[in-house]
Structure formats: C-alpha cells, structure tokens
Image (tube, rainbow, N blue to C red; front, side, top):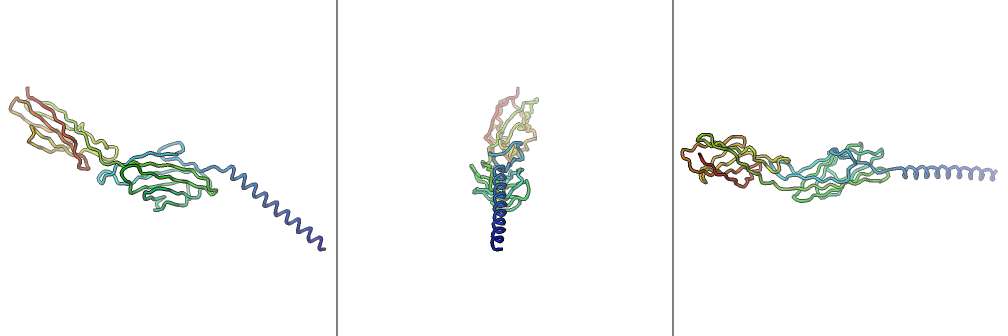
Length: 231
C-alpha cells in the first residue's frame, strides 16, 4: 500500500513538472514572438522615431506649450515614461509616468525655454519591450518684421502702401498690426497695414518717405525709405 502511494505521488510530480515545463515553453515562445510597441505621430504615416519641432516664445502670439498626439499599435500596452526637464502632461494627467489603457497618447510639454528642449518618450508593453521617440523642441524669440514700401504719384498726390510687409514668424502667430510713415524726416503718421497712405504735395521737389512696421509683439522693423518726385 505504501509503495502504491509513492507510485501515485511520483506520477503527480511528473504531471506537475510537465505542466510547468509546458507553460515555460509557451511563455518563451510568446516572448520571442513579442515585438515592441509601434508608435505613429499624428502628422506622419510611418512609425515615428525622431521629431524636430520649434515654437515661438511670445505672450501675444503663442503660449509656451507644445502638444503631440500619437497612436500606439500593441496588444499588450502597459505604460509610458518620459525623460525630460520640461513639465509634462500625459493623457490629461500631470505626470512623467502613466499607465496606458488604449492606443491613444496625448503629450503636452510646457515651460519651454529658448534653445533646444529635449525629451525621450518610452512606451512599454507587459514584457517590458519598449520603443523610443526622441523629441527636440527649439524655442526662439520673436523675429523682427520686414517693412516693404511701394507706391507712386497720382497727379499731385502720393499714394503708398505697406501691404507687402510681413512678419518673419507669421507661421507662429506673428503678424503686422501697424505702420509708421515719416515724410521728409519729420512728419510722422500711423496707419493700419491694410490702409493706403496718401500725401499731397504742391511742389515738384523730391520727397523722402520712410516706413516702419510693427508686429503684435510690439517689435518694430528697420526703416525702409524711398525718394519720390512729382514730375
């Protein structure tokens, strides 16, 4: 009877060992087939590894934050981690480490400074395989606008326009908001950029017109000048 018990005990041990070995083999096979998460930036169609971006640091044109939306392809997502000196919000939570519950990842960086601001995003699955995304955000100060002066005499009246003037950082919210016209170095007149400047002259001598434009950061351009004569 005792021998029979030992026999059945040995069979039970062999069965348990077989189950454990089978589980280990399945896990090893699963782990070998597992691939790291694939991350796609919303503005690209291919998998994203590096992002180079820029932001204008201006109170009136743009805030000092930058947001990015990603789609993650992986059936075993676990969490995302970000290494950076910037303040970070992940999926509306102010944190640099956040569990992932779906395939959407929204990251907002704030406190961006002038120069290069770097961040690395790591997306992990349950087996700790990861993908990396390197993000570089270049912060720059307001750029000086450019004044462009054009016009001509119509009879005895000089008609000028500054409509071709532009702000170098117009893609980042910068725009021309006003003009300063200077006639013969003394008479100053302000106008909107889309308004023509007219001046009547009784004499036929040459007249020097200067134009200065300023943007929505109250930064003035260099003065441009042209000499007009009534013929």
